[in-house]
Amino acid sequence: MAVSEERGSVRSGVRDLLRGLPVFSGVLPEFDPAAAPEDPAELFLEWFAGAVEGGVAEPHAMTVATADGAGAPSARVVIMKDFTPEGWWFATTTGSRKGRELARNPAVALLFHWIGQGRQVRVRGRAEPADGERCAADYLARPLESRVAGLHGRQSEPLTDLAEVDRVARESRERLERDPGLVPEDWGLYLVRPAEVEFWQADRDRRHTRLRYTRPGTDAPWERGLLWP
Ligand SMILES: Cc1cc2nc3c(=O)[nH]c(=O)nc-3n(C[C@H](O)[C@H](O)[C@H](O)COP(=O)(O)O)c2cc1C
Image (cartoon, rainbow, N blue to C red):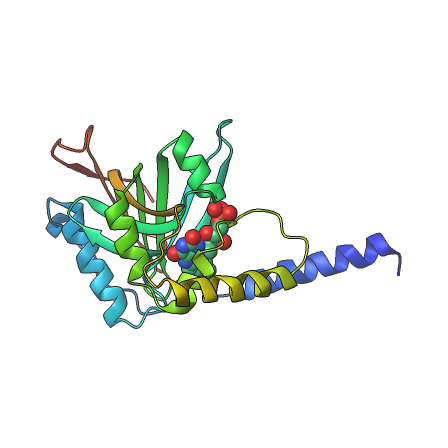
């Protein structure tokens, strides 16, 4: 078989595989947008509790999308560290790609996808770095392995030799054992203040429900409306 022919058959194999994969196959919860609260924070907490109780794996993992100076987006998963009336919190290093992008352009999008419940929560807003005290408290509250991994200050830089990771981790561990109060300068805790929050509930017949909350400023009251699926 010629190489191009072989590639073609692999591709059609993938297509068949994809067509056979189920979607929205879990137990889809009820969602009545007419009964939704005025504040999306309340609804987020309700849905998050539902995801935890419903056994969704890692419900606190969220995708964070940022954009570079030319507007080109990049996305990655991080852990939600807190949720307060102000918004969503996550921690990372300020020197990472996302940290550098946020320093130039704080516009950010978050996405929770709770598979099995057919739910998405989509957030658009601005990320602001927390003060040094809060960043330090977040870092110091982490287990040793996490602090070791966060100390090297090189997240997102090119790596030429995997063995370097182990060598630097050993050094970091020794530094932390000598100085348990050590906090890396580039440790960043970010608060995402929302301007738009959408709650999306899947329906097996594709009559998905979308409820979007928007507000013109972080002190303005929320408005809400439905969107076509
Ligand atoms: C489930 C999961 C949780 C993660 N949590 C974090 C996190 O809380 N903070 C973080 O910096 N990276 C986390 N990562 C790694 C990021 O996805 C990403 O690889 C890293 O932050 C570098 O991203 P960047 O180069 O775009 O800045 C997590 C990855 C996964 C899959």
